[in-house]
Each structure stands twice: as structure tokens, then as C-alpha cells.
Amino acid sequence: MSSPLARARARVTGVAANPAAPAEVLLRLLQPGDDRWSDALFSERGELPGAVYDAVVAHPGTEVRAAFATGWRIPAAQRSRLVMDLSPHVRTMLATGGRPHREPVEELPAEVFARLARDPNPVVRAAIAAEVAIGDDALELLCADPDARVRRIAIETWPEPSDAVIERLRGDEDARVRRAALWHAGMRDGAAAAEFLADPETLSRPRERLIEEAPLPFAVYERLARDQAPLVRKAVAANPGLSAHLVDRLAVDPDKRVRLAVSMRAELTERQRAAVDVHVTRSDRFDPPAWARQNLDHPDLMRMCATSAHIGLRRAAAHSSSLPPDLVVLLSADADHAVRLLLCENHPGVAPEVLLSTYLEAKALTRGDLLHKPGFPREGLADRFSTDPDPERRWLAVLDPAVTATRLIRLSADPDELVRAAAAPHERLPAERARALLDDPVRMVARAAARHPGLPVDVMHRLLDDAQIPRSTPPPPG
Image (cartoon, rainbow, N blue to C red):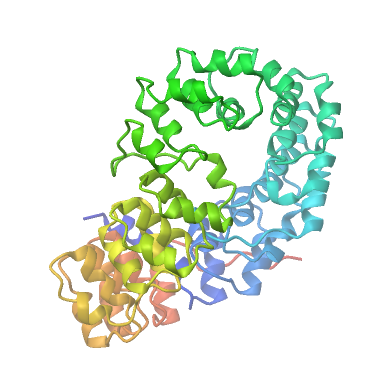
């Protein structure tokens, strides 16, 4: 339950996200000094009317323009209009961009990246320096930036800087820039890696990665394999240059994480892997080994991983989007749920029923991503689930492209709020039923009903009136 005003404001966010809301309604949500509706306007819907774009770019509210700059659904050409915005905060938000989990985002044009890399404000340049998408030319420019923080972020962001850039920055006046450059040098040269590791510090991800992947002098391998910190031993246990006698020593390490890293080494046979005392459970979470992560398109290595008795290697193979059909079938029937889930998340060729069964079994917060896979079987969901006793299954009925208005009316009166909210904005639900749901005592349902594309414009205006939003609209830019 919620107060009338709270419910009224929830309905406004629904109107903001309503794909049928016209410019005259949306412009009312751009009142000066009011940025409450920005997230719904810029992150929950597709394109906006042209008049709304113009009003946002000219809006006096910095936070409104900043929210627009990070609106990941907004076309890049429209967001790019803020590249010359007077506010450094807005330009910083444009540089940072909005990057939702696993959602494709249209990148800004190269000329906009280049302009941000030359921005007069170092905070803006630091923000764009953290974006690997800007490309090598812009990152090289930022590695020569007059601001040390910008140089450090740029060299840390750049996956493969040139040897010349690394050498120049190893002599930088700023210690943190020098250390970031030394890390890159260490990934290529054992002496530089030893120099980096000689400086004691808490085990950070860059330090861990260097221990895992860099070529190291023999004495450094020996020292790291005896380190008192299990995470250090775990990292060196994965290093491909580790000698056989150190692999054998770490294979019987008292820490399970160390033994697990040994068991996933590329050179081990299946018998050698099985000899390592480690048991992977469904709840264990770990990244694929670097050699597998870097070779997801390698057919022989991925076949070796997919057919291994080691769950960790099968999980690694499930990260590949290029597995052949026979391996997709094999992993689709894997006893390990994480293997099937990873396969569904990463491979375009998973069978529809596997996508559905994996979704139904999954407990992870990201399971909703499977619903948006092209192969997810929407046809027939209404017949299968509209009367299911579990509301988390029942609401799937609304995804069926053939779901009838009669079924939607029944689902819109469901005792479970999740089911009502799923049915409320459906275009096949009669508009008068959606209007009735605007008064649902649960805000989530009332908000969903306000997204119904069949709501009359005068009703949309009334919902804004209820939330005390003025009828006047911002003046046109000019």
C-alpha cells in the first residue's frame, strides 16, 4: 500500500516511459528545477519526439542534461549534441556514458570521442580516458595529457599500448603513472615483472593478473609459490610458466582455491586433473583460466574444455559464442546448472526449450537476460503458464505473442502484484482495464498501467495533474 501522492508520482514515471506519450505530455516533465522523471524518460523507453530532444539539450537543469547524456537508450547522435555543453559535469557524464549490464549501447561517434579527449577540463578527459571504446589514437593522445591523473587512467585503460608509450611513461614524473606503465612492461618482460612485484602492496587485480599471466624469473615463481597469502599462491598456480615441480607442490596446497587453479592448467591431462583433490560445487564461483578466456574461438581448446570431466573447464567453454552444434548440444545437457546458464547467456544457438528450462531453474539476478534472447520460446507460453500456481511462472504468459485479451484481463486481476504488473501495460489488454489498474493500491502495478499505449492523451495529462505537475511546458529553445 502507498499514499495517494506516492501512487500519483509512480504513475507519472509510467507515463514518462509510455511509448505512446506525445511530446505535449513529455514536455510537461521537463519543468525547470524538476529532474524526478529523467530516469524514466531517458533510460526506460526508446526514441523521444524531436521536440523533447531539443528541449532537453536547452534545459536549464544540469542534472536533467546529465541524465540525458547517460541515457543508454538515447541515440548517440542526440547525446552527442551535449559535447559542447557549458557544464563540465554534463560533459563528464557524456564521456562516462550509461552502460547497463549486458545491454548493447550505441557508441558515440569517433569525432565526439576525439573532442572529449581534448576537452579543456581534466575531469572530463579523465572520464573519457577510462573508456576503452575511444580507440588507440585517443588513448595515445591521453597518455601524453598534461594532467597526471589522465595519463594514469589512459595507460591503465589501454589494453595494448605500444612499447614506445610504455617506455616514455616509465620515466614519467608521477609515481602512479610510472607504476601503471611498469605493469604493462611486466606483462611482456620478466625483469619488469619482478621489479613491479618487488614493491609490496595489497593484492590488487592488476597485481594478481600479472602473477597469473606474466613471464617471471624462476626465483620469483619460487617465492610466490611459498607466499603466505593463499590468493598469491592461487594466482601463481595459474601462471603458464610455472615449473612442473612447483605445479606438483601447489597441487597439494591446503587451500582449495590454489588446488582449483592448478587443476585448470592447460597442460594437464584429464588423469592429472582428476588427481588434484578439489571438488567444485554449484555454489562455487570463479573466472575461467586466462588461457581459456583468451582462446574462446579456438576450436580444439574449446572442444578439450567442453568434453572435460572438470566442471571449471566446461564452464569456461560455455563462455564461447562460437562452439559448434555438437558441443552446444553436449553442454545443454550438462549436469552443472552454471554450465547451462553460461551457455544460454553466451551462445546464440541454444535450443529454445533449454533457454526456457534454464530460466525457470535459475536463481541468479541476471536470469531475466534470457528472456531477451532471440531463441527464447514465447509461443505457447500462455497455454503453458497462465494458470500455473507459481506467480513467477504465471506472468510468463504475457510474453506469448498470441496471448488473448481474455487471458490478459484475467491476469490483470491476479492476486499476485508481479502478474498484474506484467499484464497492465500489454497492448492487447483493453485500455479501459488498464485505466482501472491506475488505481491499484500497489505502486508497481499503477506505474505499469500508466505505460499502456492505449491510454488517451487526456488521461495522461490528468495523471500529471494528480502529481501536481504544472500544465505549462518549458519554453522552446532559441
